[in-house]
Image: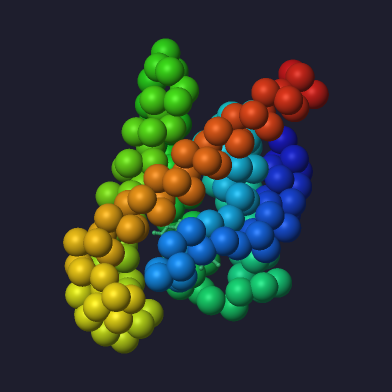
Length: 171
Ligand code: RBF
């Protein structure tokens, strides 16, 4: 199980190279499909195994590609929040509703995280950073929520599709 989790984590590093800034005016927010393998890891195994895949992914990605500890950590916190809320929600609930609720929670958590991190990362206040991107403070907040919802609903659906294709190999 742990070796499969590690393999999923390592494979997801490849997917992390596909980085798409969904909102060009806030290009520090980059969509990548790698979280789908972490979500598949959660559905196949359990929370701890998914966290292991996630740690593998972000540590390897840090050394192989990014060297940006803040960016990688933000991705880590966002995915950790998503899989934790998902694991916490009751099983007898429509899975798409679970993805939507979890992604809203990630959006809220990441607005707070960005309010702390953006002043460190861009060396200007959150509202100055918003102006710098050509946005108002509120539009930046909405952009962060929208980015995280798109990232996690898309990856939730993709992770679920993959899980349904491969689950029989693991039972
Ligand atoms: N990733 C997310 O999934 N949600 C976020 O809210 C988020 N905020 C970020 C804020 C900053 C300042 C940086 C540098 C990165 C952030 N990331 C976030 C991670 C980013 O989208 C990307 O995955 C990493 O930079 C790795 O290339």
